[in-house]
Length: 184
Image (cartoon, rainbow, N blue to C red; front, top):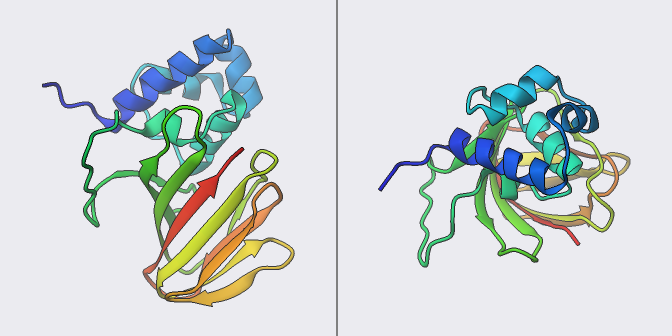
């Protein structure tokens, strides 16, 4: 059995979804707001995309990020604390690990977040109707809609509309959380 790397999954998925929409590399790069050379490298199986690049591509392709980076499903799946497909923000203090996806037609992704204090992660609006659910596992964070963020501690839960700007900022080192994103 061949060991498929995360970049192999990403490369094949970007090409598959781009071809599904009959888009050229140039047109997809333009829609996503990324350099054509960056997209070409990703489709060639090289490069190390930031979380922002993954989100931009997913939005341009009208698919959840998980469709670009997830492995084929198995009956039983265990992801240990330091395993999984990790995407790191360009800011470097925010990393998201995809934990689970929904089958085709369903729109739910689950991520484990590990965030360090520093600059707040400001996210662009997701597609209309998107809702984020977050449970803080350890530490404290300020998160939610950019115009009304809340401070949460370990064990606290929040849900909010993510089809507007929203923010996540760790207030303590090694703040961790579980985020479920619903789209549809």
